[in-house]
Length: 631
Ligand code: AMP
Image 1 (tube, protein in one colour):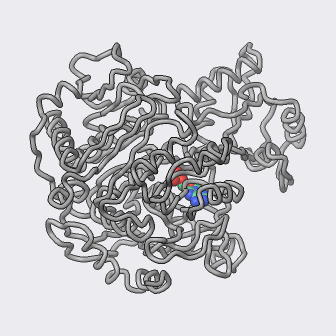
Image 2 (cartoon, rainbow, N blue to C red; image 1 turned 120 degrees about the horizontal axis):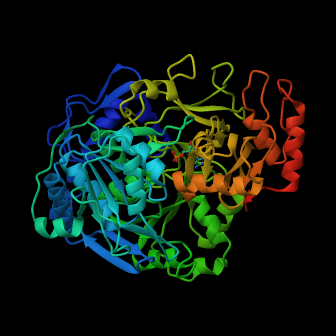
């Protein structure tokens, strides 16, 4: 069916459209209504319906595909491959759920999961879903402070952690980070469940608090735990994401709407059906990892390929070798990963038999034209740019090859996805921007199924962060965009202080707060600047306290250490510049955009409000001279 027709139907008759889509999943009790929109912009999809994500991802496939692989977990770090059938997955998830029960975790309790891309992370997520516990997976690259913030916001009953992750052959122990986070947290959970792979066998254990998964697994192996049926709008999981303040937001997802959106997108966007294989290279700690490493493929009865390791190890052909070995149909990755591969010989793209591979989707950051061209020509396959956010859980803008593939336009993630009423709004007038005119990308509520329902424990923040920007009630994506005559949207970058480093979203305020914890620092400004490989990188401008005797170089190293220790290597600033003064307006507002422009050798813009014109001149000189720290 043509895209235009089905898209129009999803917008003009949302209840009819979504009622049909809801049939793709199992309901213990069917929905009593399709859309309840009594309290805009809060909406309740499939209200009264009772269902469960784990049932839909695992149990319902047992009869038809019990022996089919559900999950293939490949780690080139630990040199292991595990092929897990739906039947085996069912057993592992039940065992894990039984362990959770024994640790007093039940419906509505939060569970923080701090693990890399290993099979047990998937078992843990599904086990939570099975018993109605709300999981909150924290990316393994985040350090103690970030973990502690998330623990305090979610107040979990349990923290599940791996003993260690590995990157490029180097073991990264998680336990010391967990211990530090729990020490810093105001409301630490009573138990920590450690899933050990023997990577850090001597890790410290806290008597009475820390429990070992292998021991409990042996005790609970083979026990079955009944599925907890949940009302469609109850929370399924939380996923924290950076905003304009230092405090991350807990994006809350529901149960029924999310399952339906996953089922629909697997078919229409990703073109993956039962028995077919999807390979998403994301980390399970990100939104893509939740939706397309785990829930999407499993809800569809497909096989999810999970990968732990670098794209270049043991050689830069490893991802394509896996595509050939497991007959991957759809692959999902990020522009940064492709830019890493682009540094290698393009011949690696042709070394393996890729006849089964149909599509490569790339998401999370702007896809630049040279990268898009290199990979499209190298693979000889369509490459599809996807735009979405942690908040939405599935693509807002995309092409839909599973339905009707429209032409790819380089630089654009394409057209609105089914169910998304998107507009581009002129910020000043609040009216629709004309084709070719820059504006803010918004979604007209009600948001479709699958998108966030609220910010955990903070409806007010949900309203003010996303819906308070225009006269009309509109969800602001906080991204600048422009739409062309054909309805294709181009994304032009964030309207707020969020930066995108290698597809990872970071708040510059979080990094500023971390830098400012260094005793030598008086004040810090962090901006994102363009980087050839990572898209953007954070750089720091800081003033030092007069009273502290330290060299700019020592202070810069100290600042870098603060960020790595508190937030993790993912947030490490690329460069630190020690300056005498930061550029501010007469009312004291920091001119981050001017700093960013100078660092990117652009015009710093309107400086009429600048308090001290010398501050920018000095910064220009310092930028020419080179940084005090970083590389
Ligand atoms: P995250 O919540 O971490 O997925 O980050 C979402 C943000 O990443 C969006 O608001 C955009 O700024 C950016 N982003 C995601 N996908 C794309 C894309 N395909 N093109 C341009 N920017 C993107």
